[in-house]
Length: 410
Image: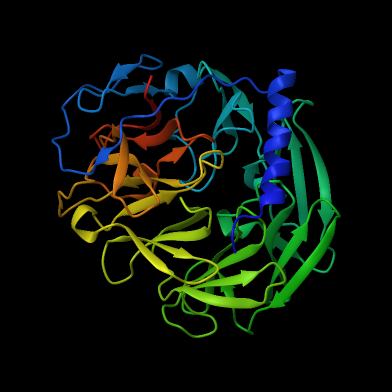
């Protein structure tokens, strides 16, 4: 299905009105030059000082370290964002959240100065429309909640799912459709797992699908890894832990009513994200399960397109399509450790155009060590228009804290 033009028109009209009213203030965006992905030597440069911009001497981009134990008054070894598929910037980019920890560090979105700690909802995401709101769950309960950071960090229970003991928002990878209307949730009751699609606008559950007895959340042969809404809100993407083409294996595509449409991947073990490609179609972006090639799969047809060949990519990558105001691009970061495989994307975070041309825009060397521990993965994630990328790094020293960095082409 082509892009839901009405939905996106409504969203972008709202954003335009907010911009004209002064609520949203954007500078003109610039991007690194288009090029092909080729292997280059990572420069040896000292770890940047806190809030002291430095140039990546290879790509000419600016890198700013935006977290620091002393400045934050913290001894946490990881002062960073939580994941590549979780947007750190709020809707008007006035704030950045570093939410690997609880409470989370809230930063000024323009100066990157530390503001305060906030007690974010469990499995939280920013609203795509309201700059003050975050959505998520109240931990270990059946409540879907909203945090308002402009109102004393007040919590509102949006909906209590009384038919369940607990609900989960996509199992840590949840997201809202870009108009904030739909969310995919898990409901748990007496060992039963249901998938449900919740309509925030009308405060109703629009669809529900009960999973087989014995289904669990997370990892394992009978587990579901995550369940997320597509950006349009027309689709739900489910990732099962077990590989294969069976009913509860691989990556599945459902419509909003949770009717099965097609298989998107036979493996649920590779990193994915969903977005609009350069031809305006909704796609799943993933690494091929038989190689390390980056592949897009069109939702409406199942057609696969090679975005980058296996010869250019290490297998260990994260994919992020959080650049909802820059469709047609995705952002890739690498986290390979020992043994070192120095393919063209080694230790880099970059944007790739989703048209099969192999066009990339290179934002930064990540300077990550060879320690592949989860908390040390860079997990690059762009802002809404893709002009900035936030990533984590121990700056090539696995004994050092993991800090957050923002790369941009000024």
